Image (spheres, helix red, strand yellow):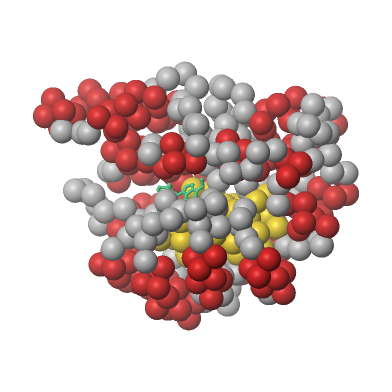
Length: 359
Ligand code: 6MZ
């Protein structure tokens, strides 16, 4: 059920469940709304791509990689994948992953593999998936070409099953943002299946004000907006205030919202995308008992349970739902009725209706 061989919190929770409970979770209608493409590549495929890269790269191109990329490539090829001591270790992996997924062929293969994990098989992980990814230009692709490759795979599934969110990275320069938005506008005009925009990346970097006109433009196109917010204690109150002023429909993580922010989120009913294993393994939440999900469950506020990045967080959507159902200390010990309600809330918060042709 979980593709990473090293156990994490989700596999420990799954082990606590009876076969009947597992079947209940498998059949439960639910939406995965927060899954990053390049954080969800199965370890076996990453290892294949890493060895292909190492065998094809000329000695010069390998030796030009910096030591940290070389060390991440080595970590990725260990049986259990990378070890995370804190959230910043996680972000340091991406330069290595991007080194081996920078051709159209690699992007097609990883997108296919990730969609298969979530959607194929006898018991798909979810009823509906919103996959997100950051358009990346390389020697062999423009950002638009990157999106076209991903969309081609996404659109091989029905619109009722999957939609694409285009992520913008907090570190992007204005020129890259312009390029991304131009590609999104063009692809929407061709009725390609982009349903929303996300803001992600290293939690404290970037000049947020620069994003304002781009988010406004995306909203005008009818796209949903979700932003990673207050993910670490390093995020300031001003950062949070600014992100909320963009009027997002959904929020990623929202772990460290202050009182003022919480009241806005509750009043505007912004859906909170909750990634339990991600928070535990990045150590932004020490224990499920203290997780901010509790306040939203108490007030029946819209939430969606999501995986974030299944590879480093050693999870699956089923595993994340197991964390709801399993008894403490393995999980939150919710009842099946409560878990069913959470599944409904996730489906109600999707951007599915925003697919071209639907609005
Ligand atoms: C913030 C995250 C993230 O877009 O290349 N990403 N950003 N917080 C997180 N939680 C721990 N997990 C992933 O997928 C990888 C990119 O998603 C963002 C990072 O910017 C990462 O580079 P794509 O498909």
